[in-house]
Image 1 (cartoon, helix red, strand yellow):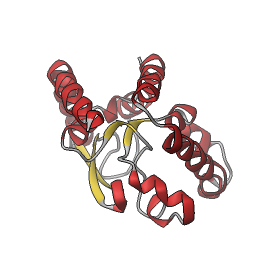
Image 2 (cartoon, rainbow, N blue to C red; image 1 turned 90 degrees about the vertical axis):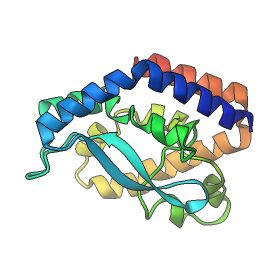
Image 3 (cartoon, rainbow, N blue to C red; image 1 turned 180 degrees about the vertical axis):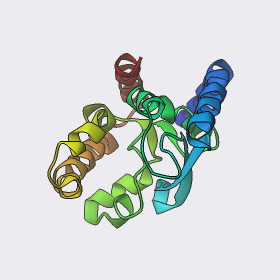
Length: 182
């Protein structure tokens, strides 16, 4: 209950403080890509799908990423609209990053405990794989590398979080994300 209250209060404050930045990012993305917002189905708490909000970084016609899109992705500014997902209760500030269908919803055994958690904007696994896109681009078979190396490691790290989660642990993770991303 306290975690949800924290999410509501701080996402509201963040939206009030940074809403104008989000609107500018959307406007620039619209100019750059012909659309400002990108919606994508992700798996949420209890395996329920939801639409995650991001700033669009790819051109609609050819699927290329512009210089603006690279900048927004590299700085993680494309994820600022997820403050709305947090406010609406689909996400939390801290928790496993929401993944595409076919990953968390396919977990078995003890790993399914991760579905009890609300997905988060920030996690230790997200910090470790902050530059995941570049890491995958360097692989000869990115999908296989993700499925056999990165995803299992994220599951392991997120299970560690599941068992030791607390308000103080969330604050430590948030502080680490803040120091890394700003």
